[in-house]
Length: 369
Image (cartoon, rainbow, N blue to C red; front, side, top):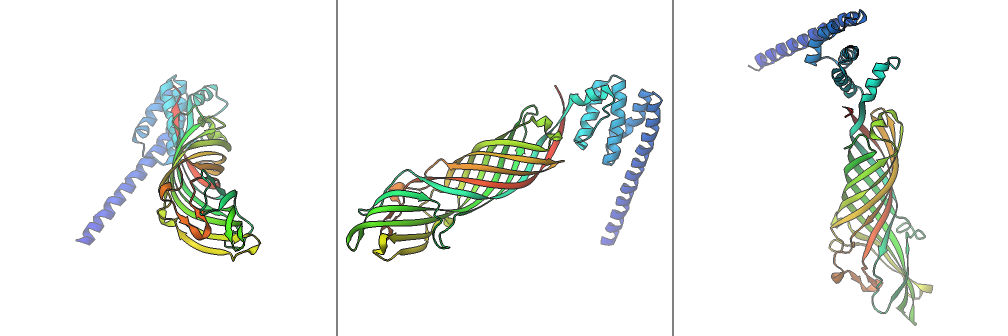
């Protein structure tokens, strides 16, 4: 039974393939005949000869373009503007980079009537964070200690705390609502992992001799899943993108941010007393699971450029992001670590990401209204 079904499947497939090849051969022959008719100025007969193949639309891409090209020229010289525009629109859907004969004014005029623009796009991006810096809205320490100053981006310590780091991976979808504008709307999905550090200079710290000074060094790590929704404004109209290589743009928008709460932790905390009045206090991997807000919103601003390589594009951009809500989940039940004189002060995070990526355009042709 299985062999019988396989046999009939092969027979049906071969029949379909033979029929399709015969149709392609028939359309190729019709194209040759129609070309001869066109060269003799018999325009209506040219269209009649091509019509069965134009209706079927089951030829190979190159054959289809040749059929439509000949039909378009015949329609132009028959003053059938609407049919000529539709033929050219279909050609440009198949080949956005198709070029008409610039020596024929009627064809040049027709080409200007039909625009091609990148209706949709998709890109994959990756990059790193140039910096991530907390902006504190409160300034409290425990006991009698007082915070005199905070310095971001600690870089003068050993390998446990001498550099911030960050990783960014994203997929992005773009949509162009208006061809005669430079606007493009975007939505994406982004994974971010980074660490940020700061140095907290404190006075009024209890020491053996009474009151002294100390520096608290902190590095925090977080992982986020983000859904950015933003817009870009380019330097050219979208209908001109097909003919351009360098495409600079500016971007602005918002991002819905979801924290992987188990990832939030202090990677390192280190309390260093001035003049080594007391031994340095160290602790690593302090969990912040319930101390960080699980959802946040971020404002985004950026600049970048795409390098168009016929449907494929490369991109590079710089993007600034600022969290709009406090990162601390509940300031009334904040984390306190007495041995570091540390109180978890409210803060928002701002960072700068550098991204590179690769993407693809899906072009669409449209007749001007």
